[in-house]
Structure formats: C-alpha cells, structure tokens
Image 1 (cartoon, rainbow, N blue to C red):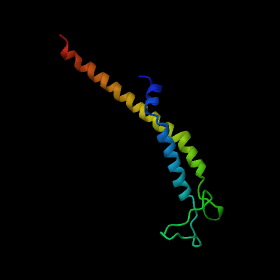
Image 2 (cartoon, rainbow, N blue to C red):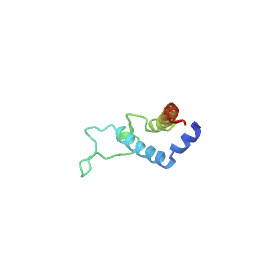
Image 3 (cartoon, rainbow, N blue to C red):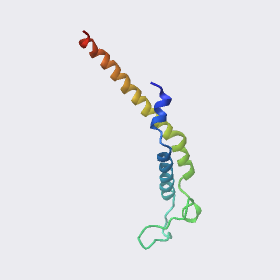
Image 4 (cartoon, rainbow, N blue to C red):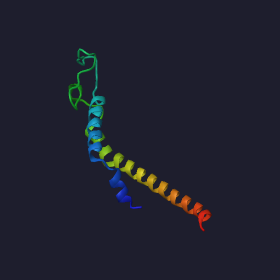
Length: 105
C-alpha cells in the first residue's frame, strides 16, 4: 500500500486546526499562575488574562506546546496509524493467501 495515500486519507485539516485551537486554550489556562490575589469571577472560576497568566507570568510556553503538537505529536500519530493500517492489511493478505489453498479447484 501507498503510505502517503493512506496518510492523506486519514488527514483531516479542519479537525487538526480545531484540536490545535482547543489545545492552545487549555495550555493558556494551565499556564496561569493562580495566586491568592487572582480575581475570581462570579461563577467561582479564576479570571483568565491571556497567555501570560496573572501578572504576565506563565508556567509553560503555550506556543511551544502548540508547536510540539503540530510539529511532532500529530505527525507521529499519523505515522503510527499508517503503520497500523499497513500491518493490518499485510496480515489480511497473508491470511487470505494461507486459506486460499483450501479453496483451489
């Protein structure tokens, strides 16, 4: 099987874009240093003040997390998925060839 064609079939750019946006929001939330002087909203949640968190200090590099996913984790996941499909197809071919000897006239 053509590995590139399989990768193209499993690639959904819109899904990847939404994943990265959601990841960016989560990372920005976790990056905040929520201290005793953090403003609490009426619903009980801390006020999110952007990437820098409270007072401009972030625990993690939000853009770095997004870049890690975009450059490494997503492509690696695709590679593993393509390998899995390839192995599954190979096993099916081997199995079908093995059993076909019983059905030859």
